[in-house]
Image (cartoon, rainbow, N blue to C red; front, side, top):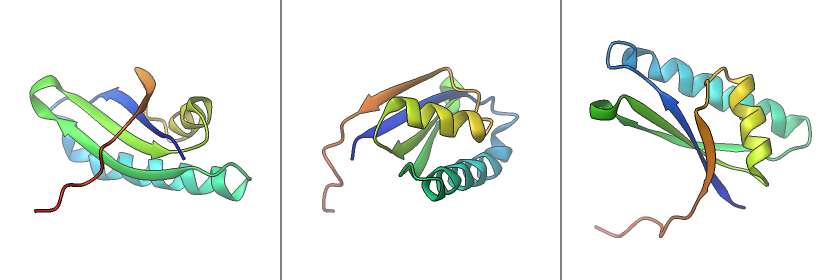
Length: 90
């Protein structure tokens, strides 16, 4: 299943609310999955210097992820498909 990144603005001042945003993202993905569209929240990546937070989802399409982000009230700047090389062994 493809992975998608949701890019959002998150100021340093508001970064303490990131766990709440992650919870909304997780719940929205679970709701869509129960409704028949398989969406899985994977993780978030916060870049304090740029005040950007990325939320990573696995889903059939970018449109499905955009619906998830909207339902989670993430205020997406954009949704893009991403490719990962996977985790490297340490």
